[in-house]
Length: 115
Length: 115
Image (cartoon, one colour):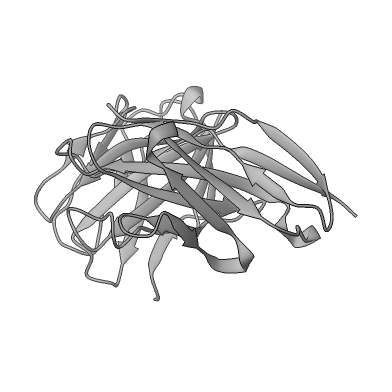
């Protein structure tokens, strides 16, 4: 079964600093990869997704992520963090080769932003 | 209605009582899902339905049941609620049995407290 690991439970950055949130996955064949963001008390919003093609994916709100097959990683980046980016971020994977198509989520990384 | 509607938004429930969480989508998506979100555990799949008339078990199905009588509705039932079912429940849908390229749409969640 596929799994997703987000090694960092909580990250704190200063406003304007760069950000990288880590995500590692295990999968059977061809992964579909996602990053979601959840603001406090809210539902999940899709930031970006990768399923084929260019390994550098651009998303909303200035986020990007890079798929690295050799490292089984799909890290999320943003060059300059805004206070409104404070939220919880979830990496998720669908293993399209395993006959099941449900999203498997990591446990999340909470981002705090210092003004 | 636009997207996914979940009801109720929140509920306090006495242990041992029966409860149905409602989920309705207006996007004609084939597949629907129920997740629960717990602090430090991320989102875990409870049950899913790839198409109307079919359902399947996810990672944490015990104590829950679902039905999919039509495309739009996917209710989740707790037959006899226990305190460990205190959680935030999210319904989601996708427009294919292989949703990788298309992503998922999430509802706003139901916060359930079992006392």
